[in-house]
Amino acid sequence: MADLDLSAEIRVLKNTMASVIAVIDLERLTAEIADLEKQAGVPNLWDDAEKAQKITSALSHKQAQLKRVNQVVSRVDDLEVLVEMANAEQDSDTQVEAKKELVSIESQVADLEVQTLLNNEYDERSAVVTIRAGAGGDDATDFAEMLMRMYLRYAEKHGYKSSVLDISYAEGAGIKSATFEIDADYAYGNLSVEAGTHRLVRMSPFNSAGKRQTSFAAVEVVPLIEGTDAIEIPDSDIRIDVFRSSGPGGQSVNTTDSAVRITHLPSGIVVSCQNEKSQPQNKASALRVLQSRLLEIRRREEEAQKKQLAGDVKASWGEQMRSYVLAPYQMVKDLRTNFEVNNPDAVFDGDLDGFITAGIRWRKQGESGN
Image 1: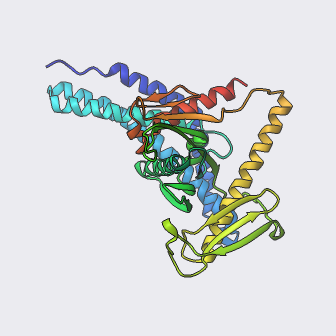
Image 2: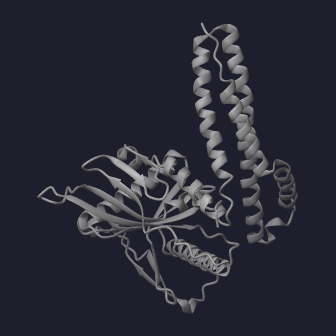
Image 3: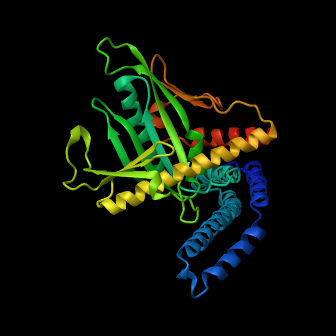
């Protein structure tokens, strides 16, 4: 039996990890963890709840980042030993195991490499995603529901916690809009490249003539607000309405006015939440989403001002950023990165990693080219 030679692949992994470690700066990261651990150990830490939350959250995030890096480095070293063992014993099963381990490590290293590109101010935050049906009638509202399921399946596949805050059901098929949180480190950095207009082309199941139909849906992604962000909203700037939660067809979900709708009067932003059991819980969730959207508006205004000062006249991302074609052929293509796959079913089932990775690299290239 021939020896298994993975030396070239292992060398690439080590070189990539060296670059990742250089960007992350493990010495600095370790020093920051030590400092945060010292701060977290202060007896009266929780006298200032906001400060304590900020310290413990930062500590948890940095510890997890260090653990991920160390685990990958260890796995690469172990892979070398596994290959040596397979060749010494001429064991075909161990060779197969080594090849599988290589594929798994390559995926983990690629994820770490992409993470080093997520270094903008809010990239490490959790995300609030809102989907709205656009032009296309029943096809558009059905498409909006397909997209919501796609992102929730993406979160499920990655072990991310998700919670639906509000759904507005359409009279026919699907949904008019939905808002949900994805609670995970770097959820915003990853999913922010999904923001924009999505287009679906298919043989319409709602058209008796069986004609091809094009429909649209908009995806908005904002970073989840944290207690330390200090987005103050005067009571005079909001109107709060309460109503009964409802599901498809108007069926009552509960018999109390627990759902909350908040209107931000200066901007016209409207946020609803009905997934919690009590009115105070729904009000708190709705306020958090409203603050997240206002934070994103502030970020965009600051970015626009920076670009204006820098003389940047480039156009921003195009309105239509991805096409999902189900007829006459099968394809999902990102129009910014040109990344495409020929398996729409897998994409709608949450297989978005290729699109997200390509989007992050594309965005970073644009930033470095400014």
